[in-house]
Length: 223
Image (cartoon, rainbow, N blue to C red):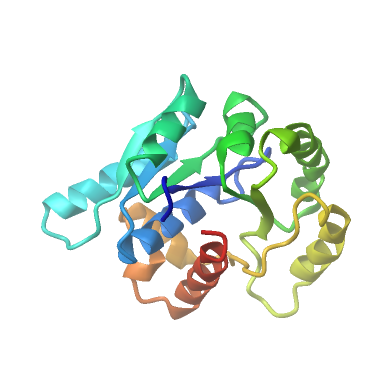
């Protein structure tokens, strides 16, 4: 890492896209690589990330050998809180609520790498017009950031064309948020890991592990 840790944001306007789940798994992946990792939970209403870390800490106290991941709930002065944290941690991961607001716009201004998870459904994809507008509004404030759209909760059945249809749709947004080379499927393994306070890299589902490893490999190019 450089003078400060990398700031990674998982953000978007649509809830239910699996942002917290992916952020959790990336936090685990970075921790397994030896990075001192801090989770910044920006969703003060749901606090999904905070609850996940709490379950993880309980498992550690019960003797399970898991890497420690730190957490902070950030509602006020988010920008300064994240920048200060990046001076003390190798990686700071922002889990941003699925709506336009202060946390989302702050993430777009301070993060080095921004992933916008999106489900391959028309209702979800149609929210990207507004996200694109916000990206344009904040581009001059953070010109060196890397932004990627990430397809999530994709159907695993080979005959379902949602993913291909979504990829075709997302070509329209490649200027501001190109599509990630990684892709996250709708797998029970992710839900099971979240319930246990773990990541799929700490389990035994190889297909889910390959998806997270692919995302981590892409992410590390930007570090």
